[in-house]
Image 1 (cartoon, rainbow, N blue to C red):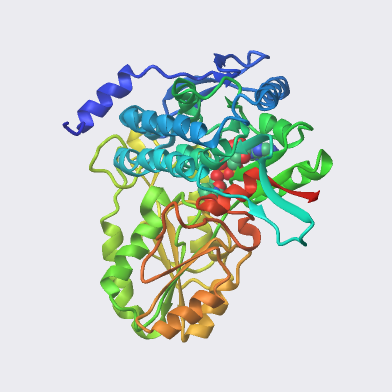
Image 2: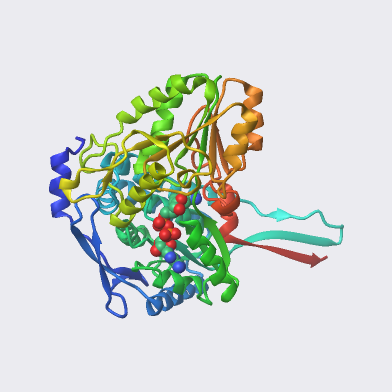
Length: 497
Ligand code: NAD
C-alpha cells in the first residue's frame, strides 16, 4: 500500500463528494425548516459543503426517533455480545474508511493530514472497539444482604443521550462518547460543532452499515447554538454529554435545571501547567515535549501545555532548547504529509489567538519566537507557534484558555511555588512535572489539582486511562471503564426470600 502524496490528497479533495445533511431515523435528511449554512475550509477559506442547519423541529424528530428505538429494545435489550459485534464492525468500517475520513477531517478542521490519518481516525476506531470489547465483560453486583434477602445492584442504559462535541478533534471526541454510550445500549443524538460537522455526518451512515438499527444514532448539525440549546432543554433527553468550552458547559447545566434535570457530564477547557524542575532527567526531551505540547493540533487542544513553568536556575539553559524545538513546528498546507502545524479552524479563532498575542505584548511579556499570522497568501488561517517569556501567572495570557499555539513561560524557585502557580487557575484538566526525584514527582502528582498528571512526559495515556477535569474543566470522565458511569443508571433491586 502506498502512502498518498500531497498531490494525491489535493486531487482527492477535488473529487470528494461531501454529505452535509442531518441523519435521522437511519436516513440523510434536510433540516425540517430547509435552513443551511456554508462549511468553509480553514486551509484556504473556500466553501467545502452546504450543511443542514437543524433547529427545534429536527431535535424533536431526532429525539423521538432515538426514544422509539430505545423503547423498542432493538438495541437497548440486545445481548451485550451482539452489541459488541456490531460496534466492532463499526470500528472496522472507520478503519477501512481511514483515508476518506482523514481527508474530510483535515479539509474541515485544518489539522495536518498525517495527524488525521495516524491519530484521529485510528484513535476514534480504537475508542469504539475498546468500549465494544468491554461491554460483555462488565458484571453487576450482588449486595451483602442478610440471609433472607437478595440485593441486586444493576446497571441499565439511561435512554436517550444527547452528545454535543467540539471542533478540535471532531471525530475522536464524538467516538469517545459514542463508544460507551452505544455499547451500554443507549440511543444517541450527536450534535457536532458547526465548525467541523462533516465526519460526524459521514460516520452515521457507516454505523448503519455496520448494523446499528435506525434511530439508535442520529446526527444533527446546526449553525450557532440553536439545535444544541434545543437538546439541552429537551424534556425527553435523559443525559447530556458535552465536550467544549467552560462557558457553554455552564450554560448546559442551566438548561438541565430549567428542563428535566437531565444528567449533565462536561469535559471543558484547560490551562495546563507543564513544570520543568532543575533536576529533570533529560532537558532536551523536556524541551521537545514542551514544544509539541503547544504546537500539536495548532495548540487547539484542551490539554495543551500552555503554561511552561521553569525553575529559575535552569531557565537560561532550557529556554533556548524550547525555542529551537519549536522551530521544528512550521505551519504549512495541512494536505501536505510533511506539514506538522495546520490552519486554525476559522477566522474567528484566528482573531481570538491574534488578540491574545496582542494582549501578551501589551502586558509586557516578550515574544521569543513567532508572534503573528503567516501564509496570508493562501487565504487560510495560519498562526506562527509563539513563545512569550517574562509572563506572570496574573497576566491574561496565563489565565485564559487561548486555544492556539501560544506558550507562556513562567519562572519558579522551588516545587512548592511551582505547585502554587500551577494550581492557581480555574481549570484542572492536566499537568506535567519533570524531575528525576521520585519523591518529588509523587508529591507533585498528589498536589496538582488536575484530572491527568504526567511525569517526565507530556500527554501520556490510552483508552485504559480516565480522561477529564477537576474544577471548571468539567466533571465525569471519558475513556476507561469509568466512562460507562455516565451512560448507565444504577438500580438496587431488593428481594425478600
Ligand atoms: P464550544 O463550547 O464553543 O462549543 C462546543 C459545542 O457546543 C459545539 O458543538 C457548539 O455548537 C455547541 N454549543 C455552543 N453553544 C451552545 C449552547 N448555548 N447550547 C448548546 N450547545 C452549544 O467549544 P469549541 O470552541 O467547539 O471547543 C473548544 C473548547 O473545547 C475548548 O474550551 C477546549 O478546551 C474544549 N475541549 C475540552 C476537551 C476535554 O476533554 N476536556 C476536549 C476537547 C476540547
